[in-house]
Image (cartoon, rainbow, N blue to C red; front, side, top):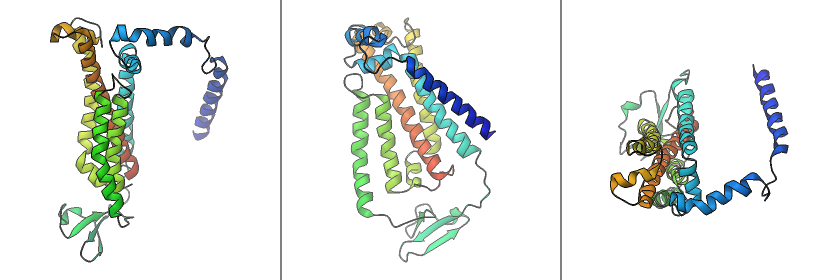
Length: 277
């Protein structure tokens, strides 16, 4: 089976390599995208979508369906990791939990973690390959987290006016949680964003995106036609489109943030979500 898979991968790679000869040269002015597609987006996006940032107008308006399914793919990737590494994980090794006695530094190995209170003043839970944490590294990382999150919210909120958007803001939010995990431990990340809450947030992001399109249908427009909100909310078309794109970006950011954080927790802990990098 492995040999068959290798053969199929090599054949697919050869097919993709052969088709690249038919692609236009990078930056060729006589290619179809340069002659028709790009000028349409650059020159007409402001009048048609009322979005100053035409990159966002392409992603959230012209290619709204594509971006919605990209968000769905991100969510499915996280769910795939969850079912492969978490649900189907084989428990063949007995779980051992390690606790360090803070005053003496003595490490205890236990099979029943509930014998020690989660917030004990004398004991702290540590990883099996625990090394003393550097106070400077930990303090600086935790100091940076609020600034990263504020900047992420700015990127999401201003994505339709300036460079940014839901994908970029979601990655920044996920990076803040991962930074906490790298400077402290995985259990701290789990306490901040529990596994169940992360999955619900990822699913909610997809629902927000698709729900925005359904609301446009209810308002009498096409699916993901943000201008249809204008009569319903009593605002001008540009304000309605800005409102719709902002809601869509929030949905994308939720899915990206929750999915990347979930994948980090699952991969680093081999599906246990107990300890890891």
